[in-house]
Length: 146
Image (tube, rainbow, N blue to C red; front, side, top):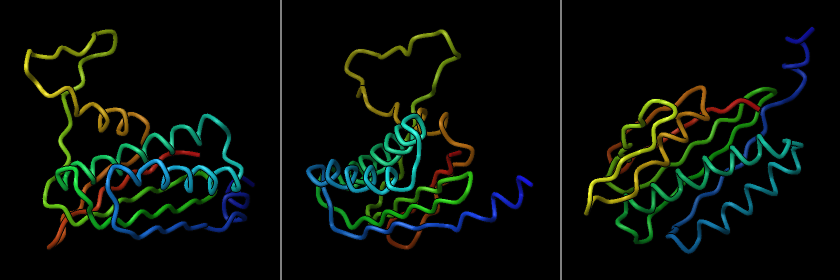
């Protein structure tokens, strides 16, 4: 019976293609928030998805050294999964700080960049994570349960 219910909900897609910088990330996030709300995701799942979208978009902009980059955001929603992909034309690949065992606070060294924690959070929220490099840029994708 669960398999029938899973097939009953078609895959829904949202695609946003644009040149974007830091200033556009909140507006893109708001579009995604409305789209997810219209599809009935509960507050917790929607919050997780929005966090992932914001982190991936910010990483794409950061890879472009803070300037505008060509971004492609794609969301695919099925009965139990949401696949979030962010493509950019920047050469950098996102770096993740090592996350310490649960119960231990992260330690920063003086003068060290405090960024880099977002991918650890994204990975913790996801059931699948990956990076595909392309001739120009890369695509970072995440799958979360909904």
